[in-house]
Image (cartoon, rainbow, N blue to C red; front, side, top):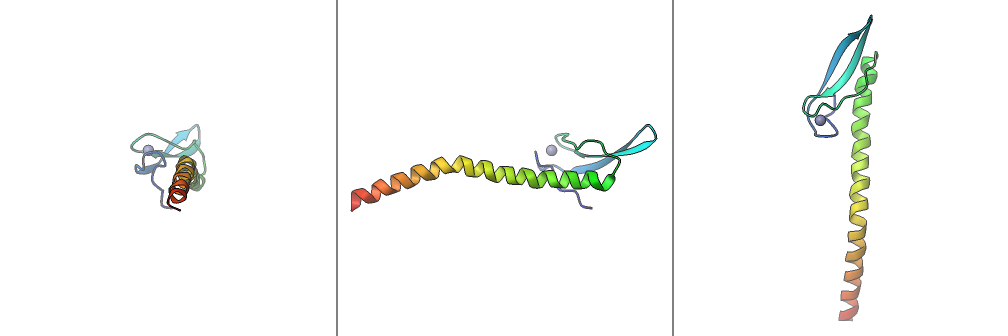
Length: 88
Ligand SMILES: [Zn+2]
């Protein structure tokens, strides 16, 4: 499975494993900022979890962008409206 880039800094993600007791645990870590998933004994699940977090963060980014631009759009619509009102 291909790992998506880091949702924080868009750095390269890498899959690391370590032994916890007798169990091999997996974790996806960003090589730039150190963001990581929780340790899990399921390698594929760790990768999926990492990749899904990126999707969620993309969604969050769009919601944030939209929320930031809504007041601007409202002001622009208001100004545009009064501008056209003046010209009419
Ligand atoms: Zn990162």
